[in-house]
Amino acid sequence: MNETQFLQQLIQIDSINPPGNESRMANFLAKRCEAIGMPFEIQRVDNGRSNFLLQIKGKTPKKLFFCGHMDTVSPGEMQWEYPPLSGEIVGNRMYGRGASDMKSGLAAMYLAIESIFLENIIPHHTLVFLATAGEEVDSCGARVFLESHQLADVEAMIIGEPTNGKVVIGHKGALWLDITTYGKTAHGSMPDKGINAIEKMTKVIQLIEKLKLEWIYTTETLGKSSMAVTTIQGGVQTNVIPDSCSITVDIRTVPPQSHQDIFEKLTLHLKQLSQNEPNFSFDLKKRLDRPSIFTDKKSSIIQKALKLNNFKNEECYGVSYYTDAAVLNPNSSIPTLIYGPGDESLAHQPNEWVDIDAYQKSIEFYRKLMLE
Image 1 (cartoon, rainbow, N blue to C red):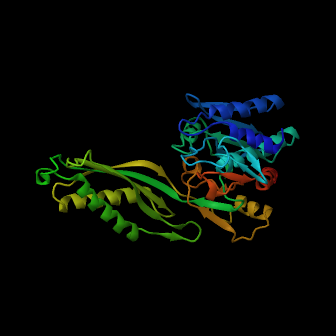
Image 2: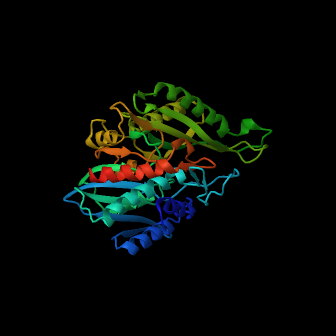
Image 3: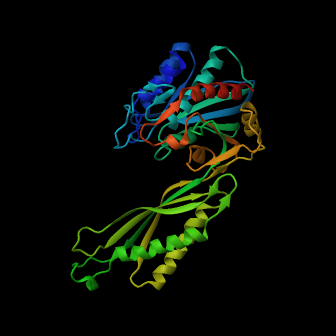
């Protein structure tokens, strides 16, 4: 099986999350390891869900930690030109869900470490490869991994998410919130007898529109922070005054913004609103909390990545999406490189594809990074 066929088979494994079924991917990788005698570990996460881990001891106990996720998002409702679980090759492109995000990066990291094992090379650093479950929803795999593994001896972390071959030194944080306003039901013909929760929510949305302008923060690499109302639900039918209304808010942050600080300030603003607005009651909860990740471009892992690509020192970038590094390395204490062959603009899109040359180039890049 060549490099292209290997990726093709990974794409053909259904690991759509939910439900994930990442054990299918883990078992596939395990069989390949068994065939060549490379030791591995499968870590159970949940029914049908696993992490996959392998390690090659180096000359020092210091570790280079390579990580990617096995799950993908749904293909969606739109018709694909090529079946999303086919791995079909057209020209120099391989199509399929996960081709860019991020089975190509995962495959390339695995093949790089496998080649070192097969050649009986002892790398300077101990090499760790972790394929996680659940990154696309709740990072359950990364969380389970941390329950039984320490990262204190990790010298650098490499995340194989799609960057289109760019050297990425950080990603934005993500804070998702649920806000609910409460009222009192009444007949639609007698609105004065009730308290309209949707009308109360309009005050909250106006507040968020005001705060997102006040709280905006910009950095050179990661760009601007953002805040957006993304869903709204309320009411049961036309002739009933609604007694509850809920929204979700998607906040993307950049250093040095603090999620706890944002949450506390928003809570304070909502309490002030309840004092000024008659019959206003609310509930505020966190749905997801992923900190931003940032590594200094002077870090040795970033400098090595730039050198291997013949990039200039200023050719470092940031991305808007979050990664498992937000769970594994929440304080950015471990220098982290995000680098992968996939194109981030194709992630979660119909007709997702990866350039096969870029995929093969990334295998060699990861291998050199492991050895040098």
